[in-house]
Length: 248
Ligand code: NAP
Image (cartoon, rainbow, N blue to C red):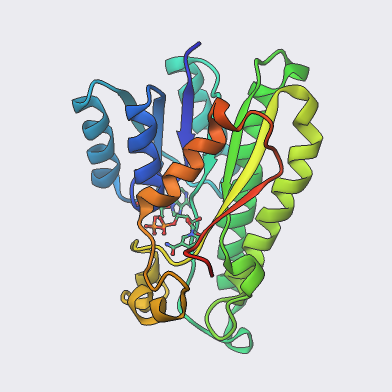
């Protein structure tokens, strides 16, 4: 059976690492991106250079019609998606809650929460045996922040990831008898561009001494957990969370 994966935010960071590993494992991979077309194309070219199958598709996961169009592009190219990685996520400048404006909070919730809901909905409509599908897997990229809270930095982001955790728990139970497993990974601090959006590109190196393993993580280390959760190796695992956080 052909395995078809959509990785949201697959152009950079954890999403790119996931797309590359999936391509090497034989998935046809849709690399979704928002702005960085060159980065998405580079991931696609790298997969193709190793004999894999991939395409880049632009879509804002927070916009319903764009999410629907993303899934329809995949339907047309390869048939129904069998694996969804809800990876696209944003944070904004480090700030206390009392200094956050409404538009910032709205953006965080729209991308991190609404984006995960909309993509999950489209995936379930295609995967569920209830709708004539053959099943599949969904992995949500949450964060250790959902349980640490990120005080003084981004409580809005942490709260959005707590919503992703509850989406994981509830959806896992809702579709467990319909051939779909829903799980999450909770990365700690990983070397990617996201910390620059928070206003501190070197944040991983600043906080790494507080991590029991005394180092930040690499995107590939998160991607391996994601690929495991989507594989048959984890066939009895649903509604589960894997911390990829060096013990923190
Ligand atoms: P990143 O390097 O900043 O990459 C984010 C990716 O998401 C980019 O490819 C970006 O697209 C895409 N994206 C952003 N907004 C989007 C939207 N509205 N629609 C579609 N795609 C969108 O981030 P990362 O660190 O790899 O983060 C990936 C996930 O891991 C996020 O959910 C993040 O919260 C989570 N996480 C990261 C860490 C960490 O320390 N890095 C820790 C815990 C959790 P463009 O390339 O086109 O801009």
